[in-house]
Amino acid sequence: MLMFLSATTLAICSFTSSSNSFPDLEIEESIVKDLPVGGAYLIFAEKFGGDVTRKQIEGQCELEVRGCAAGSRIFTFTLKVTHAGKTVSFDSKSNALTQEMQKKLRSLQPGDEFRFLKTKAYLPNGKDVVDVHSRKFVVV
Image (cartoon, rainbow, N blue to C red; front, side):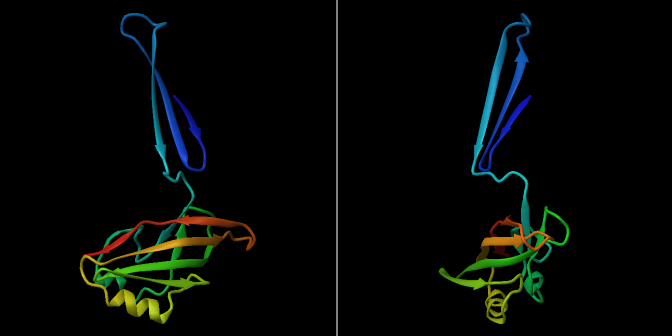
């Protein structure tokens, strides 16, 4: 099996022989676009997106990064919250949620959602920067 990787595309080629004769090869190719491969990912309330309860949101005051070197730290992100059909955004220049962000997240009701965007982290050397992938959270 051959795999070709780029920042936004993953192509997998596999070759199988025909049941009648070995020289006849069939080629299968799958391309998945806009699927991040590897890299750092954001953790909030011990989750990488998906369903989250109000109880899990309570007491959360910072974001974690996993999937890269231990000691990496988020230094910027945007929190986008959709509550009762209205969307608001908040910006941070650290890994900490502001009091305003925490208050907004605690006010969410089932069906509301939020997402962390434009998230970046420093690697432990304090110089190299990585993009941090995240998924949407939905309050249940």
